[in-house]
Image (cartoon, rainbow, N blue to C red; front, side):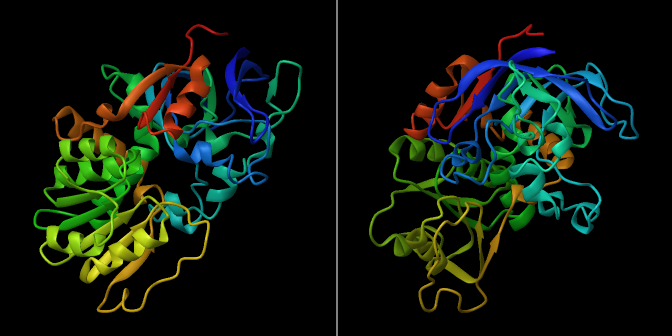
Length: 367
């Protein structure tokens, strides 16, 4: 089977949209999905900054949505040919955390999602000349017309929904909303600070509004702050005295703060703005040491890392869709669509802050 995919061959080179070859169909426990749309996530683009960690050449993309066109034999039974599905992260399904409904903390998470841990997949997907491609990214590699994925990664959705818009629910939107709804369990009367108004941060803002919490959003981009305000947050810029301004806007201190920036100064501002027993969640990967200023963790304050919104995708994605259909979670306002052939333009627009969530649309009918 031959189809188009966006291949990254060098950490500092553009994506190349080219023909790739899948040598066989889905094995037991796998499905073949015709991709309708795939969100571009910051994690995809971070591969360039972590040069050497992710094997190349690789097909990235891990916010795919599409239609199941083939299914391998196996005991999964959750999806079948013709089903519309949203794809999320990979997990082993067997370790203690997976069995404990915490698949985002799977013992094999890094191997399966970031390093392409299923080596048998390498021999099945090649470029047009037979050259090897890295094992699939996040169990998907969905910057492509088709993706061969573990059936466990797929969440079935109503076929009446606009499938091309739903891919971001599988990671970026899931991460921000899940932090608020699952990790913090925020509700009426709670106060929340969100640092960074990108796709993850704005998803947290929307989820907090849906939950009835009061939110302050911090960013340096006026357009992003305008969106945060539209979604119900109080907008604040990243200027001096931020901690004092945050305390004023949260009646003396926030119960929760979510950092999406990995900025040590902003993290310390947020910690100082927490009320006693307040919790700071980190979703962005820290690339440098995080020096904490004296007193920031006094009086019961705590920090924890949050991966994939502490979500079980099969539970949270339907919940977010229900909120969206009720008009309480307008995540589609973040999206701008691009043909897959324009992936490099989408990356430039994302890096420049001209778009919050690019969604790539493969050409239909490639076989």
